Length: 111
View 1: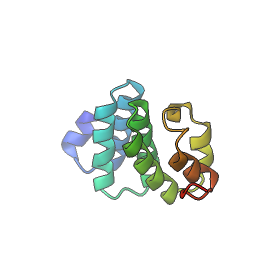
View 2: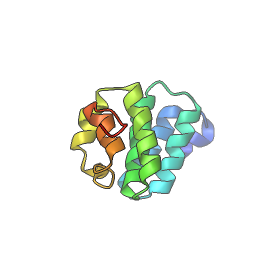
View 3: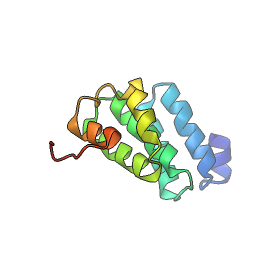
View 4: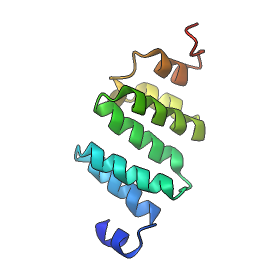
């Protein structure tokens, strides 16, 4: 992916794939940086990118950034609600009211 990006820095798919590889290797900061590069390009599959970013933040116990990214992912693709509910990578944030409001369609005002 580095070779492709050195030739074409705005190659969104290469940046996204690079982020996924970094995430799989546990290099969450590098993955987040790759995902942010994709988001700057206004890539068409932004939901996947936001979801990956949310996962990386959650795996680092960064609750607020994880929830913010997950909100963007779900806004772009509401079908990700069910995916997020079942995803063990979100264990660090599943107990928050904001997470539940996002994935269970309950009001976030505490009701």
